[in-house]
Structure formats: structure tokens, C-alpha cells
Length: 194
Image (tube, rainbow, N blue to C red; front, side, top):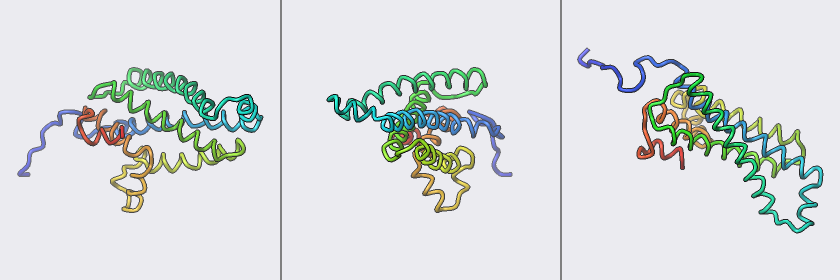
């Protein structure tokens, strides 16, 4: 061949499949773990009449929402830190970038899951409805966001649909940070944070 391919700076010429899967799995786990926490809390509280009693007592709706956000955020921080403590040292997943942006992107995706859970709880009357809505929305996100199947191999319609999902661009950014060592100065990584 007229072109000689050298050894890559980061990674391998034939990388293992787990290097492709790890960023999507990390962000999908954090997104999925945050949904049921917020969804079930608000639905059960509304069903039991706790929200109405709290509002009658004079607590504004914003304070109720803020209390849920703060308490759930503390739980999400612990979940994300435990996930990071297991994924990289225990499973020996290597990363070539800085750890703080990887942690921050994971936390922001977890917060996205929390927000999605609040949305589902706002439109659901029962626990069954909330469960069906959250699972019905999550599985297409898992399959089409680039976690399992590369978005470059999708047809044109699915590609553009996948790019609108809340996990696709952050997964691509996480992949660039872990495999290539890129940081926030790269537009591909910055898009994931935006």
C-alpha cells in the first residue's frame, strides 16, 4: 500500500468492544438510576395526598420541587461516585483524558435522568403509568443513542432521530474523552455538556 498505518497514539488498531460500550453504559446507568427515584416519589406523594396537604399548609410548589431536587441530587452524587469507583478501578477501564470532566458529564446525565423522572411524574397519575412511560421512553433511548449500535451505521432517519435523544451527544462526547483524551476545548466534547 502507498500508505503506512502507524500505531495509534491512544488505544489500539483493533480496540475491544468494551471500549465502545463503556461510555454509553456509564451514562445509561446514571440516567436510568435517576428516573425511578424522582418518578415514584412524586407520584406516591400526590396519590397519598401529601402534596395537597403541604400546599394547604402554605408551602409553595417551588419549595416542594426544590426539596425533591436537593434530596435526590445528594443521592445521585453518591450513586455517580460509587459507579465511578467501580467502573474504572475494579473493571480496569482505562481513560486517556482528565477524570473531572468525565465525572461532571456523568453527573449532568444523572441530573438529566432526574429531570426526566420529574417530567414523567408530572404527567402520570399512578405508579403503573409512570413505570410504563419511563420504561417506554428509556428503551428506545438505550437502543438508539449509540450505546449498543453505532449511530453512524443507522439509516438517515434514525440517525437524525438519535441525534435528538438526550443521551446521544453526551455519549459521543464521553467516548471522545475516554478513548482520545479530548477535553472541553474540543467542540465534540463541549457539545455533550451543552
